[in-house]
Length: 425
Image (cartoon, rainbow, N blue to C red; front, side, top):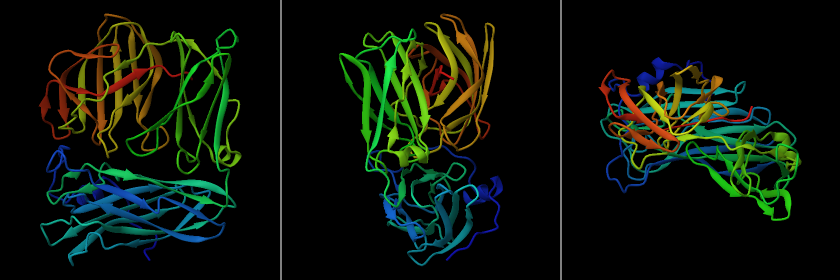
């Protein structure tokens, strides 16, 4: 059993972990385009345990043909429900007898996370056969509840190849149920116009934004032509766990009015069996600027984008979303938009809560056909649109005049894949 380690996690450690000799590299498709991406998985994916019970989960790697030289992760859990008591090194990276180096193995019950980083040494080859990277021991410390076990990268990397380059990786999260919560999670409420009159037959789409590092689940709620009521039944552990964010996208029948609201599900919501009387008031439909995700975001690398946005219509903005490359924690670390009376900025606060989205320091309006400058500094591996000159996005056009990557190389036409919109506060 591995104990709580004293090694500090920092840029220096991870710089070493990315195998000392590799500078920050491009994320590119590995080997063959049709080859499946590797998967790092929490196993078993769903457990039911009793209060006080000690149990284990494995972090298993499925290379899917990729040659893996190093592996790292951060696992988040609910520290009011679970206490991590042990971290044991597996045999995945040493399965052929090779020696390995343990860079990080730290349990932090105060923050509810486990961090781990390991690489092979004294060999130039990786492994391509699945195996257990680590085994984590937990104890259930609450009477009841449902804790997610969410995998994330450790400073931008999950798996690396023998040359030190990150491998695009998918993750499969898990959850642990203590005792027996409700077998269903009911969401219901009523939709109104701003004057408090009923909006019958609304369109209500509900999305779980956090089902994994880079995917989401979406459902259409039940409605009725003659009523303003909506409802949706989800399954705890399978569809939703505490700490995940549900996005409610509600529009009037004619599509002219809308409301987009995000809500973080709490453990009390899980224990109570749902969200009750979650009512929505529609506003005038606000414009949105959205580049969408490109067909191929590669090559991708963190860096600083500078360019221009030209809206096609009025767009109210207080939020920015960054599309991430699959299996990565791609994000915006800093964004500034200015010009024509606008000067707003947003800063990233780390991999917590709604980390995909940043909030600007002030709400602002982009007016049609006017030019606005932007500076966007990204981290990890965001999606990039490789398009010279003007790119037609939903809601207007965007141009990248200059992109400077993390290695200091400069490019033109490397457009950040982003979305700008206003979210009700």
